[in-house]
Amino acid sequence: MAVSGILLVLFLFAHMAGNLKIFLGETDFDHYAHWLRTIGTPLLPDTWFLWIQRALLTVALVAHIYAAAVLTRRARQARPVKYAHRPKIQGSYAARTMRWGGVIVFLFVIYHILDLTTGHLNPKGDREHPYANVVADFAPDRWFVTLFYTLAVVAVGLHLAHGIFSAARTLGQQTEKGQKRAKYISIALSLVLVVGYLSVPFAVLTGLVD
Image (cartoon, rainbow, N blue to C red):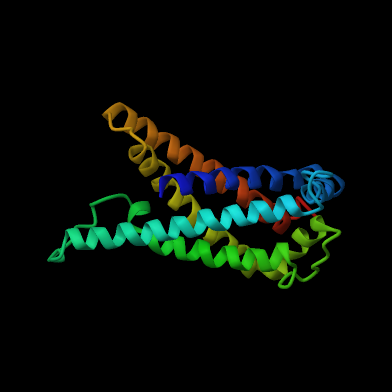
């Protein structure tokens, strides 16, 4: 669970860094998007690196979901009798919403691929002009897309806030001081991720990027 989660988090931050290049302008953003298709050439044919990356991310995602299912089953087996009353104070809000947050993120990933990767759900869907695709996607008249994007990103942030902290404990961090440090780091990284990702659609929505 922890290892697969770390791989997914590393990708999220790398992807966010690429997204932020949109603030450098259309030329730079389109050049970056086209460069992604040529990574590894001439050793690899065009787009092969992307497909290898997608395959590895899919394996990590499946492993993450499988691990979550196994841990849930083990938890239920360890507690065959349900709580008569489970106080809401047990665990953080992020911890209590990990499952439904994961479902929202999973559905969003599918939509995101069909929208900005394959272009099937994008109003422009032009592979040669990624910048224009993003601007068309988050236009003011498509506010519902921005709303769904915001919901998904916030869910990722909550998921990450609890996930990084849990991963640190799983990988051996058990001291009280270390757990406090892990908690602060997980919250900080989650906020960076949420702000970084949401800056793009809201920049388009407000006209800062057009």
